[in-house]
Image (cartoon, rainbow, N blue to C red):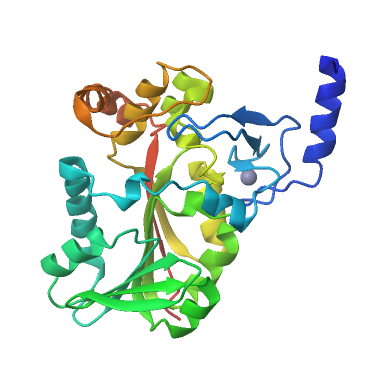
Length: 310
Ligand SMILES: [Zn+2]
C-alpha cells in the first residue's frame, strides 16, 4: 500500500502543467476526488483548484466521448422541471426582453429539449430563436414558430449561425471541456453591442464552504470547469467582452441537491428531482437563499458580457 507521502507526490506530478481554464493560473498541488452524488455513476472525478482564482476544473479533463457517457437518458435538463423551472424561465425571459429588439436573433447554446426557447418565443413575438445541442448527427428543425433547433458538431453549426444579438449559456459553461475556445468563437457571432448571458455555480460560495465535497456545484463528473466569480470575469475579459456584470442568482436547486447529498455522504448516490422529499429539500433551500444572497458569496451567479461596439 502506498504511503500518504508517496500518494501526495504522485498527485503533484499528475497535476503539473495544469493551467486554470479561467485565468491560466497554476493549480494547487492537490486533487479533490468527488463521486457522482446524483446519478450514481461509478466514476470518481478529479478536480484541480486554481491558486489564483479558485476555479475548479477536472484534471485530467475527460475526453468528449467520456463526457457524453456521463449523461443518462433521464438527465434532468431533458425533462420538464415543473413550477420551479417555469419560474426560472420567466426570470430569464424578463432579462432577455431588455436585450433583444424586433427581428433580432437569440441563440441558446446547450438548449436541451428547447422548452425555454418555446416559452421565450411565445413571450417575445418579434424575436427569432435558435437552440444548439451537441450531437453526433447533424439535424436542423423548426420546433415552433421562430424556434429552430440545430444539432451536430460545434464547428459545423457555427458556420451556419446567423449574427446574434444575444447568446445564452444557462447552466452550460460549466459542462464544457474547453470553455474559453467556445466562448471566443461564439463572441465572433455576436453583433456589436451584443450580449453573452448566462448562469453557472460559483466555486467561492457559502454553499461550497458549508457542504465541502458534498457541494451540489461539483455535479461530478458532468461539471468540467466550476468557475469562481473572479475566474469567470477573467475568462470573459480574455474573450474580449466589456461591461461584465456578475451577480447573485435565484436557483434553489443547488442547495436542494446539497441537502439531499447529506443522506449518502461522500459516496456515490442517486437523487430524484421529484416527489415529496425533493419538495422538502427545495423548501429548505428557499429558506436559506436569503442568507446566501446576504453572504456576498452566492451559490449561483448570473453573468453578462457585452461585445465592443467600435
Ligand atoms: Zn484561475
